[in-house]
Length: 176
Image (cartoon, rainbow, N blue to C red):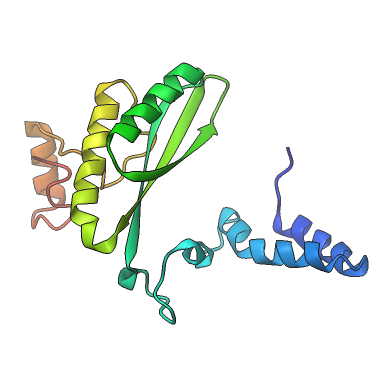
């Protein structure tokens, strides 16, 4: 497997032009903004996949939304399908991508689509699914505010009060 660097892409685009491979050149020109994200270049290439209102680039005005969360399992097919069944039982419109991190570790990236008017209930349902996944032994690979539960305990409360005395950082997420 070779990584696509900016230099490699530019070389390929040059050869496509020289060889008259217009379709191939156009294809990679379209992908270039998304590939640039992997090189650390900020951009709005990902916005193209959103359901935006015609003429409005503002994702906050979209008639729909999407929540991403994840869970980790082993690479055993039966285990991965059990994890997916838990997500399916959540009753939401979802898509799932499986990412192999190693020969034994599999991350499931779950995207939930919902109408903008259902944002609150969708977020609550995603939190319920995430808790159920954790309870069944499928921890998140990365935490996100949508799927975080408040952390309890005196130490967490004391740290939060010193680091955020006015309670403005993620209220309700770090301390119960």
